[in-house]
Length: 356
Image (cartoon, rainbow, N blue to C red):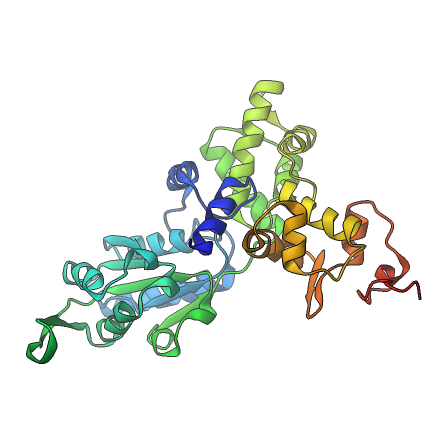
């Protein structure tokens, strides 16, 4: 069983999950900005990328290879499409898990047109033989196709037209240095500030023909975990609630009531997040407690807790990972409205095991 796949499926099922399912992908296609001027947020990345693309157009050359890293839902795929649009070039989209053999990659590379943009999502999950072939393709625009096996095998060089590879990864640390070094431009996508998400929500509401006021947008933005994909998903669910339960206009009260129905609280935590915190605080006194024990307590696989719930809880300062196990922070006690024991209140996370 592939635990990565299991975690992705669980994340896609959550309203606040950052993995896109089929419905999200269809809606995102309609909401995507078409150029850098329309793209909201990531100011430094946009400015740097704009210089790279303008310089390439001025030279009449293909743009340098681009590596985009960051959490899911921050706009890596959107930026790859914008790169192709800005360069007036076609785009080919594939992913690392889909390329399991060097021959898979050779077939894609050999069919590229001159100047085409190849978007390779989750590039860190590509197979090692394909990865090694990609080195030469990126640097020399050439691949060696092996014909035959054993001592009689022959390497036939195949020239490739100049192209731009846009690689996207959620785990830049898993990329080997030789591959990372072949990208001419690398950028890390940061989580969005609430004010940026409000702009995203207003733009999406306009495209979806939804009426929303400033307070309603702020309420949704505050629960969106700094991620545009989640903001757009929450907007659609609040829209449904407003159409059925109200007059179709999204206000702060309507947004709060709608997201309460979907169990997304004021900080963006959902049922799974709160279950992890409640088990940690109520059953184990704030920890430390081992990951496997915590997972059993909430009725989930340990990989689901570690990969799906914990990253956001850690980022929000509600949970800490220590050598002895998971520990609830004073902020976690406060968020759930619980009174911490004396040891948790001091923040030492050691637990009052012996009543000392």
